[in-house]
Image (cartoon, rainbow, N blue to C red):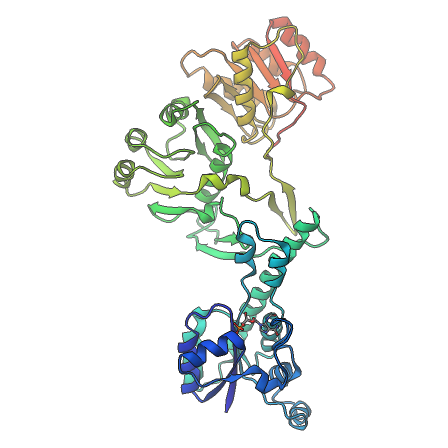
Amino acid sequence: MKRALISVSDKTGVVEFAKGLIANDFEIISTGGTYKKLQENGVKVTEIDEVTKFPEILDGRVKTLHPMVHAGLLAKRDNPEHMETLKKLNIQTIDLVCVNLYPFKETISKDDVTPAQAIEQIDIGGPSMIRSASKNFKSVYVVIDANDYVTVLESIKSAEDDVILRRRLAAKAFRHTAEYDSIIAHYLTDLNGDEFPDVEVLGYDYHQELRYGENSHQKAAFYQSAMPTEYSIASAKQLHGKELSFNNIKDADAALRIVSDFSQPCVAALKHMNPCGVGVDETDIYQAWRKAYTADTMSIFGGIVAVNREVTKEIAEEMHKIFLEIVIAPSFSAEALEILEAKKNIRLLTLDFSKAKDADKHEYVSVMGGLLVQERDTTVDQLSEFKVVTDKTPTAEEMKALLFGQQIVKHVKSNAIVITTTDKTLGIGAGQMNRIGSVKIAIEQEELADEHAPLIMASDAFFPMDDCVQYAAEHKITAIVQPGGSIKDQDSIDMANKYGIAMVFTGRRHFKH
Ligand SMILES: NC(=O)c1ncn([C@@H]2O[C@H](COP(=O)(O)O)[C@@H](O)[C@H]2O)c1NC=O
């Protein structure tokens, strides 16, 4: 008779699985809670301590960690010496292990969990059995996922020796224990305050099939971080529209990063990872939308829009008139949803924006053969940090606009230049290989807009020469914000003074490559 050891935290479907195994001549062995569950449901089952002849001890810390279990799993069936050893020690083989682990991730996701509580949820016996069974996949089935119960039963029933399935289950099991350990390692590493440990272990779960990658000839998939993260496109709920594409996901992520920097109502429209229009308002999300939209009514076509308040009927009516790829918001009013759902191609997503503060602290960028890890640029510049370097001091209105521009420019690809008024972008120059190129693009865009005052320019990094300041001053810009730090800073200051405009230094660069 074959033997199966079942030890599961999540007992969903386990009774039916055990019954299926018994119907295929398996004897079932189980640990405390699983044993109880199976017995209560009429499954014939042997308790683990009958096999080990050793009680479960230390509050369950030691229950299956025993040679009776591990030798039964690891013995090579085609090795006479192994089998002789088992016989001598009266150990029987175990042919199937069904285990799911203590819910460590779920435990640390809860508010106020103490390290002591978390540590008790580190499963030791489960992963050990999974690893023993997986190493011996030639003879042993390892089942770690209730979704595999049916497949495994079918394989057993067919009586064919399905080593390919067992190897697949073993690979899945090793991925699972590796990810499980990665979450524990992250948790403890964070407790220790070690930001960049000697080894970076990351677990990601398959989240979504993608039709293709950046282009149609590139295969792609979307994985979600195994670490609990609620503020992520992977956690967003899609209410309407076809599935997100690779580029959609990147754009929507970039849009979320912008609006979550603002506590007041904010709308950001993006194209190809760069904002094309951002608007804020003290109280009214509709006004924020109007500003984001009118900032650049051409580029928003086919854009991705993030709204940090509920999308109202009023906003939806205007969105309906243009082609948008995605709208992401904390919620949509029922009327707004009805209006927008009339469009087949628009994707509507909701996300809990209140979780923005819990978003990933780090970001990861892959390079060939490596991974760059850095803290996300979550720093929001403060007026108190601005240092006026020109004869002219910005007016209060200009200061407000400079702060707004500075908050936007860090989300624009370098070399980044943003022209804004107090609450609306008017021109955005992104990703040019020289700074004056970005200045010219931003100003050209701004000149299409209606008259606005104040009119300021923000730069993500210092001006290497005074040409950017000169060009800006000649095009009605009255105040500039930039980090400063160039050896030619004085030239830029002199140029600003020559034209009688104001300039402030922040002392903080915001490159985005
Ligand atoms: N300590 C051990 O020897 C041990 N063996 C199995 N477990 C885990 O105990 C859980 C099942 O326990 P129960 O059947 O008592 O509800 C499973 O998640 C399994 O992975 C163990 N627990 C923790 O390490």
